[in-house]
Length: 288
Ligand SMILES: C[S@@+](CC[C@H](N)C(=O)[O-])C[C@H]1O[C@@H](n2cnc3c(N)ncnc32)[C@H](O)[C@@H]1O
Image (tube, rainbow, N blue to C red):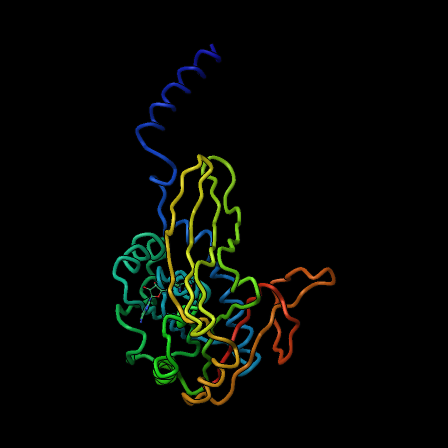
């Protein structure tokens, strides 16, 4: 009885599989991105720690520039009843995905504390924030000093008197290694997939660079170039100089702490000196 039932089940499973297409065809690229790239709760913990270190209290207002599906905004308002968040992005499709899939998971009392601005980040807002976050290297889309400084000046105008701008940076030899792909398994089991981050192009003369994100599924299908970025590869000292030029009073670099075996700990500390690493991540925290 049991075996027969199993057989019937597997026949209909096969039919269903055929009808539904490959895993890549069924996948949602934004959901894959969220599962692979973002960990909003860790970001918020970091924002809180660095703000407390500088000002001795908790930050309440967040502006998430280049917010995409604004999961950091949503996590922010969940973390305290007193917190509000503004997400800024110019892509209507991405913002809508966030409204349909991330915002809907919040309680009504939380939803009303998130607002969205579909606009260029180089536009001033009516609101002022304690933390202005620009994550995942997004400002690298600005390829000249003039554009970055203009953006930093605008960010500064959107910030409260006691406030921080926080952005992440990457670097290391591997980042210049054309064709290098960082491969990570994100999910196991029937919805299993891998995240591939490809270093596709780098021009040492002007630091133009391109990165692709591919998702590779366990049935062999792929979402090739699900996301692609064409940026300028900025360095930490260049960014700190531009922050100063834009009017920020000071900036810090937070470097990841390694354990005795050289493994990342997920903890960060202010540092003016670090050991070279083939692929590093760091934060720049700028004080208004
Ligand atoms: C690399 S994604 C980052 C998404 C999200 N912040 C994260 O950490 O994963 C870059 C986002 O910036 C947006 N974007 C690009 N240029 C922009 C601009 N000038 N103003 C506002 N948003 C912009 C894109 O639409 C995209 O959603």
